[in-house]
Image (cartoon, rainbow, N blue to C red; front, top):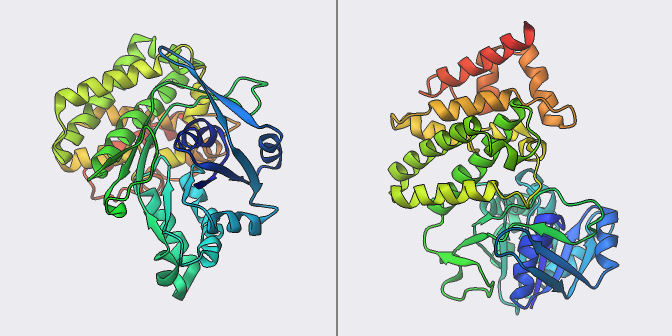
Amino acid sequence: MKAVHFGAGNIGRGFVGQLLHEGGYELVFSDVADALVDAINATDSYTVHESGPGGVDRVVTGYRAVNSKNDPDAVAHEVATADVVTCAVGPTVLKFIAPAILDGLAQRSDDLAPLTIMACENAIGATDQLRAEIERAAGEAAGTLTRRAIFANTAVDRIVPAQPEGSGVDVTVEPYFEWAIEAAPFAGDLPNIPGAHFVDELGPYIERKLFTVNTGHAATAYFGAMAGVERISEALADPTIAARVSAALEETSAMLTAVHGLDADELATYRATILDRFRNPALVDTVQRVGRQPLRKLSRSERFIGPAAQAAELGLSTAALVTAVAAALAFDDPSDEQSVELQQMLHTESADVLTTTVTGLEPEHPLFPAVREKFSARAAELSA
């Protein structure tokens, strides 16, 4: 069995790649970073270090890497003969890997079983997005070529912090992980991925994860940055920050209970587990790393506006989530392109335009006035 994974970074090696290796797959990493591809090919094993209570070292072997920038034909050939294709490249990069997957499907023999394709991204319906990009590139041939594949959405969760200097291709991660995969596309013939679990309805899992783990992580980063704290674990040691993050997650949980019928007590336990994970002092994670790309994180379906909009539509409390939005607007990191862009926009655009442009909220939406107020307040602060 062979798996091709797009994105040979820390999540690719330290999470998806590790589980695929444990499932018996020969691993082929695809990436555009020359140095990373060369480093992977210069080794015959790497170690995933689980840092924290119960963590162990796990050795990964049986892999190689191909450079999709320099040798796209090689990537297409690997896809054509693979059993599974996964990716962890970021939602905005899906359109760039779609042509390579499409070329692989075009070369794939009809005698082979359908290729399993799963996008492992922090986004709702990421595999659907990838499929749409493949179909767009395929044009009239889309129907024929996509019949050679099974597309399954997933929800993934594992904290992979910035790596220690000199770690090479080894990866440090937290012991906890979750990989939920929708079962229906497989019609009972499930792939062997140890540790992954297949579910009948993925939507609640995706929103529970995105609007608890990602919302909580980002909120901790933005509140921590405002307080001048460097590390995520240090931020949650501050009672004021911890209370603000907890309040935001209580609002997301109330929405999840109302929309998906998730048990409130189970969500309370889940929230506590998530915050304990963030407090793990063995994971040296910074507020700058977690807070980067604030424009994406403030967009319509993302970790703040996504749950707050649904909550507002239901008449539920959104005050704590809107406070987190304000903290995100104050995130000023000169090394992050989106942070710089956001601060420039706050100097030049009106609050009404910015609220719609950045968050995707329409003026008539019940959440709009509260969010607009935060944009206006931040703009006033910058101009003072």
